Image (cartoon, rainbow, N blue to C red; front, top):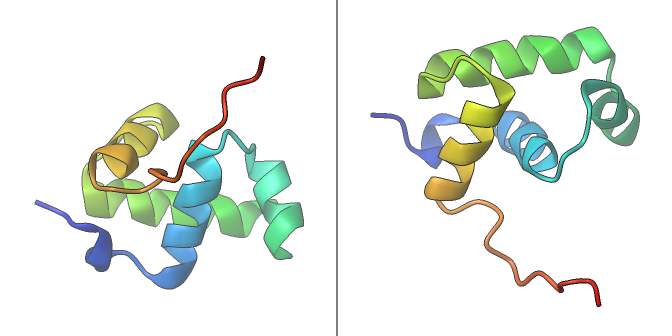
Length: 75
């Protein structure tokens, strides 16, 4: 079973942006890489954690402790 430490720093950064709801294009722009490179990293993330979709990867990340910072609900 995969754990967060199995992912590289860049993969963790991309996964964090995925759980924030960013698109591949937005991720690429934010961290100054190509959209293809984002797809490359996502493919590696999916393989490492056993996910087949972006949603599954996001759920896995949250279950493993990512994205637990306090969130303010809009009023």
